[in-house]
Length: 533
Image 1 (cartoon, rainbow, N blue to C red):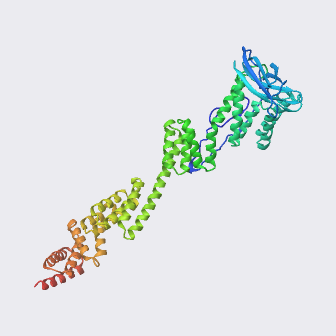
Image 2: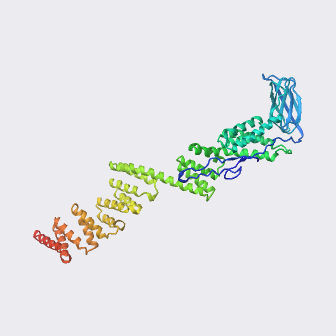
């Protein structure tokens, strides 16, 4: 091989790495590797092997109107311009040449007052082959391109200049000189291959395929010819053929990479899909498909693709990183959808549409991992409480508490307690309020006494319940005895209350330490005695 692309991942024939750096979902990678072209100038043509003379060439010669031309000298030439056979056309414009060795030929027709016409490349394999030569008025001595050594040399020189321009990154000059080389010598496989490679690098893929296919075809024919001293042999031609095919096969992947770079994500996905139909076990293509799908917003499909890449190539760090990033994106997308549903539900709940709100909250739950569900369960509990679904609401509030982050546990416990209070489940409410996760550094007595202070004036009934709980759990809490005795004295409605007030206040008089409260307790006992008479 005399000149070729080389990527960072290796020599020609190994697919370029083009591994995406997907950190923070930014694709930081190069699209095409630079072109490095080395060259040697030589003739591409060898001689025809001495196969048995079993072939026949039938040439039909016509003028510009399509009428048969008689007397045209038809020559069958080997590719090094050695004449194999010649014969003049008959009245019907036909020249039949037999005993042609198996090989590849040019067929040339010449006649006075007509410019020469030719056909290339005719493959004879002990077969009968037909060609048509169209002659136009002109000078019969005109040299055809392959008969003109000066023209062949100019083609080689133009090719060399095109290579130099490509190495100097002078794209316009490179294309100009390579096109000139191919125009001067359409059989210059090297120039055709380089031109195709040039278009490949410039992402002009249609032109690249056109030239590379031509190079592949010509090199394939020339590779069947034996080696001639000083000229490229079959192995070198085979190398041109193989590398042209490799570049052609790489075009879909490079097209996909270009589409990805240009943010044409749907196009990239379609191209990668085509590639995977032909090469379903290529981990790098699955990996790049995952990138394209991620950018296209198809996160679930992207996860399937990257997982397939990881299955085909375990332990590849880039694949593992991408899988984590896609997973994070999926989670973030789910959180965004869940938040939208939660917001909608909260709005409906404020408007009194608890059933509609509950439906939205349940949608949100289905989108979130369990460790993110606490705020949604809290809202579900509120909606169910509004719908008088008490048992379900209690479970929802408790689920919210269980999943709540430590820094927010007090708020969740207070919501649970509030639910219990609203449903008159006072013991459960006090359990929630005195839970170790809720009370912080305070003792249960302190928490409950704080509640008493907040409620004894505006909700004395609840304050009584709290105080009874305090006394039950801590009979030595004399302050609770005094306050509860006072409340029963103030809220007198029957003799049982007076009896309970007398019991509490008497205990405070016997054991209390505050003279003012002791005196006040005595006064209340006197009044209780009078109204009970």
